[in-house]
Length: 376
Image (cartoon, rainbow, N blue to C red; front, side):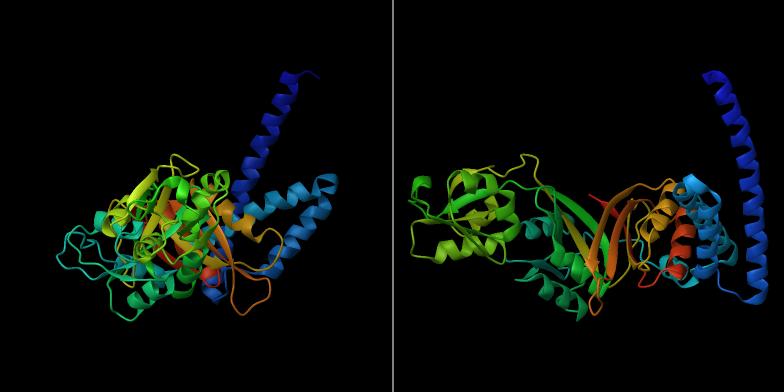
């Protein structure tokens, strides 16, 4: 048998599989109708496990592959049933009642920024809310607390950097508070080494900055064998150096921070990655969804069983949705249980997207819709 003949045989089998798949999904419709009439839950993990075990045994040497295939079919079947039964009504109404217009241009808006004046978060704030009069908190926890207790309508925090990776403390706080993400801002990060007037680069014996900035400039620090220590923010490091009597210390900070605290810039643009970017998120207790929103964020937990994450991810793939971020964090108060934070490209005005979200909100524990927003 030559290759063309083998391919013809495959085409014939594929046609049969497609017809049988259609029949199986038609049966899923009947199952959904029965569950609707009898008030039964859509997800029956015991039944699904029985199906998968049976298929794996029947498929012999291809058992593992067959199990994977049928896990995907069961996910698609369940999604169809969720759609028919109108799952996720609570989420649907929350999204429908979301604010449409973020008050970016409002005068004297109450916005809290991480750090102190001159931080990169301050720059992200002014880029997003040009007329705001921001106030500052020195820790991520205090930023979230200010939003939570009503001191601020919005908060600005960094969540990831293209070189140093995720800001895990911020992910943990997002998973704790479940605030909405109103917007995301990408800023190019061009670090400066700044010291008091009269200091020379060769005089520096100690460098201070936030841990993320130190990580982003690790090659430079290593090349000059410079010891370093952490501060609460890059601007806090600049302020500390400006107030010190020492002439052999420097801060890694922004150009704005160096100017704000009267420091001389000894070196600029020495971060490991010349295209260094930090992503900041704007958080709020109120949900806003602008018409041109293009990014969706979720968090959820998964059952501690083989393939549970894959089964969820295949739902995104089947809907043609592009995942851009997935982060797992330990769930407090449990042993080896995790919460997942996930970003993907999309808009809730898409019928397929909102149907999937509604299904997931009913099916998954600890599920939170964190926002549909614009990346800037």
